[in-house]
Image 1: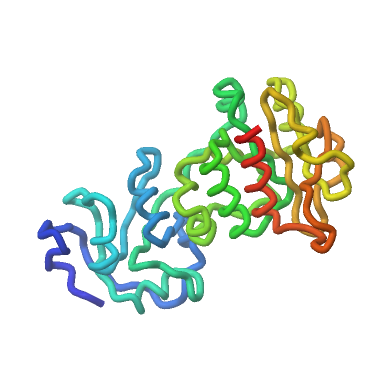
Image 2: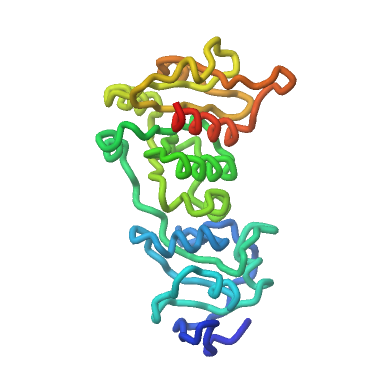
Length: 266
C-alpha cells in the first residue's frame, strides 16, 4: 500500500485514515450494502452529486489529480497502487486510479417526474438486465435530455460499479425509477398524457411515422426476447427502426440511443 501522509499533486493534503484492503476481487457492491464506483467520470459525477452519501475513496495520486476540482480537506482517502485498486473492482475493470465507496441513491418515484417536463421523453426498459446496456442507455438518456429511466425492480440490474462506469456519470444525473409492476407504471404514464411507443422489429410503422407531437415514453425490451406481450399490450403503438434487412436487429443500447435522438429531433 502507498503511504497516506504525503500531499497529492496540487499541494493540498487530503486527510483520511489509511487501512488495509481486504483480499478478493470486488463486484461493485460492498458487502455492507454500499456501492463501489470506479473510473474518473463515474467517480467525479458521484462526488459532485449532493444527493450521494460518500464513505471512502481509494485512489492513486494520478487519479485524484485527474479530477476536476479538489476534494474536501477531510475527505476519507486511502492512497493505493493500481494493483491494489484492481482487487476492489470487477475483473479487468478500467478504474483509472479511482474507486469510490458510497451509499446507494435514494428511491425516486414515478409521480416525481410525471408532472414536471412533458417535453422530455421517458425511457422504459422491460427486462433489460445487462448492467452495461442499462448504463449505456442511461448515458444516452442524459445526452438526449430524457426525464427518467423506468425499470421493473425484479428484472433490472442493481446499482453497481459496472453500471456506473458504462453510464459515464449519467447514473448521478438521470432519475432511475424502479417499480414493482411495469404494466401499472405504463398506465400511470398514459394517464399523465404520454404516448407510449414500444420498439419492435416486426412493427409496420417506423418510429418516425409513430412519433406524436406531444409527450413520449419509449419502451424497449430485452435483446432477443423483446418486450413481453403484456407490456406491448400497454403501448399505444409499436414502431420499428428502419434498419437494413441485412442486419436483423441492433443492440438494445444502440436502439435506445437512436430512438432518443429521433424524439429529440422530430
